Length: 499
Ligand code: NAP
Ligand code: MG
Image 1 (cartoon, rainbow, N blue to C red):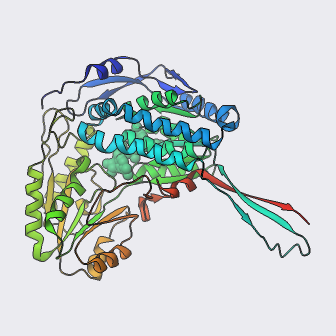
Image 2: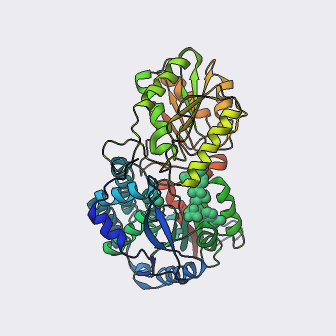
Image 3: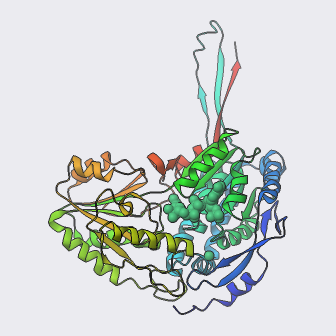
């Protein structure tokens, strides 16, 4: 794979020391340690970043606490806060090209995709959330107070920010995940310590610079790059953090809950998935085939909501699988910064090994690869689009989240209880797709699927106004939409005796 040309402006930015954002200043780690960040298309080192750990988390939490309890953020009106949050969205759009280049280089995804999806949606998240800053309302409740006869009361419920929030994010959408987490926390008036993924810290560090430029006061947003076992664990268990918000694997989600349980912190979790994508016999295949292709191969399958289990009516199974394989063959694999590339490398050697081990296990258990099936080997962490057939529900490739460009496809007889049971036969419940022309049938199926997002005749449609999150082991709480505000608000009931 040839090495792409990195824009000079990005080279210049990368050559400057990459520090931690604590209390409005960029600082080295207390330990003085740094870690290497790699271009996953080549394996080459592209930056050295300060490696935060417990000592840095302590400083960041102290700064966030100070900013929450006193200082300009605590006194700011919702209108002022909203304007600053809106400005962050504007700055993201002004720097869209640069942020997309950083994302392509660090994560491996195609720059055009990063620009159209990650950067656009990240800006929109700040713009959308900024409007809520002035619309968080309480209630007046006319209470009966039966145990206090003869007395009169006036009660109100006042929503208040939960406090200092620890946020931990993964590497699959580094900038967008930072936006999903930061925007609602800021909107509600919380202060934040954000731990970014060690594989992809760069775009969030650039976002930190833009956040300061937008006028967010010192200490309100602190950004720590570092490892999960050190910085992440210290944040999740920190006694002065009021709430932890996490996106990542279900396995680490459990560790977060354990760490947070000592102080009974509030926790929200956005975890893994193994989402069913159902193609009914009357589906418009000119939509369903490219739709199912994108459902699994978008972002190289590194999406928690990827449509990774395909169920196709048996009468059209061969045609659909062949159609997706044809679409997959058109996907141009290469460096994310090269023009015309549709699919880059997986994010790291670890993910390459993980995904190729899944492919080997599928083969051993008797699944057949219609296309792909092996890692490309050589430089970079490239795995081609893969479709596995001849699968059964017991196989590891069918049960577990692969988080790579691997689709498992199975035929079904009728859109009946057996199909619904099989689609719901997973520990996860994040998303599902349904393709069909009968509106009643698709709605009935949607109602019975246990998943937080259902897409009918579409897939991967995200919007800042729509709640996103999981049933079952896919998580707790919702990201985005009005629903996310609940993650960051306490409800205080204030009662006054008036007679
Ligand atoms: P992960 O281990 O869950 O990492 C997510 C974040 O949690 C990273 O910032 C990570 O830090 C941090 N972390 C790890 N261990 C921690 C701990 N003990 N305490 C606190 N924070 C901790 O995910 P991954 O390793 O990147 O990917 C592994 C698998 O997770 C994937 O193959 C996929 O199945 C799943 N995944 C799901 C999503 C999703 O959106 N649902 C996203 C990414 C991955 P580091 O910087 O050390 O990684
Ligand atoms: Mg990287």
